[in-house]
Length: 347
Image (cartoon, rainbow, N blue to C red; front, top):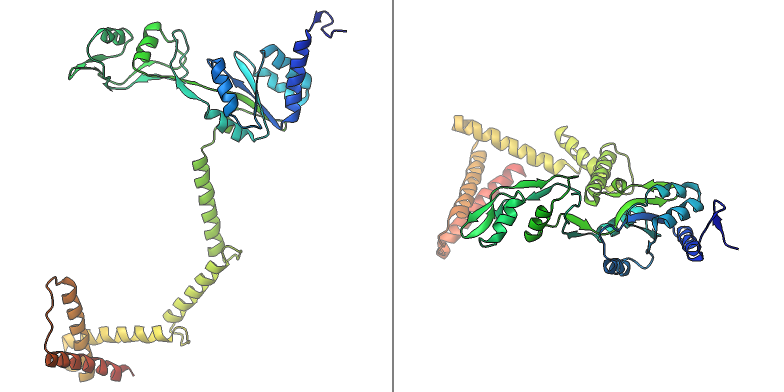
């Protein structure tokens, strides 16, 4: 006995089988989507099927059968019956909707626009040379409203111009001109209209995510959390070493600033005291040479000579000839005397 619709219309068996096949595909996959196949040739669809992952099924069928299958499936799935229109196909997968959206974007390729088609976006012709020599094409471009002229023996677009705004119909003259200029305003491919997963319907805008932007946000969030943990001294596996290092550094600085005579800071305190003493001695000696005793004066002189020698060596490009052995011994003796004076002064 044949099944019927509303008790009067009989459905051929192939339609019943097609509806059941769609319902089975919905049941056997975690997610499915309604996609537009507008403007795609049958051969291109076959190629797209082959390029899709093995776990992804592309199903082309009549809209009436698609809607009936979705409605008969029931539940939240029935809301997807609003989206099949025009040239439609269904796509089934166990991937997430986000992965499916990215996969479908890769199927889209630029394509010429036909006369009478509606421009999906503004169509812009950029200023610059076309590579065409003067000839009949000049009038073709001009009749399409494209500002062109002859420059350096070639046809050139004189200024950037929007020749058709989004939502407007493309004239036959413009379609011919765009084809001549190799401008392809359309993107032909599987365009997602809606996707269903676990009771949720996702629209294309929900799935169009800039991964690099979100990655940068995750990195910034991780860095901020790390800094907060360290600055708040909140120990975690990832921050404990930095917290200990920070605490050690702060303890060391405190010891130096507060002049705490501990083993870990005593060398730095002595070096700091030495530096401050020499600074004061230098100022005092410049004002009154008799204000500083001979040992400190000699030490200051040795330090000044060493600094001058280092500076001279760093700026000189001329090769240095070897001095005789006696002069080298005298220089060495003088340097050793200077360091000996420093050693005797500071123990």
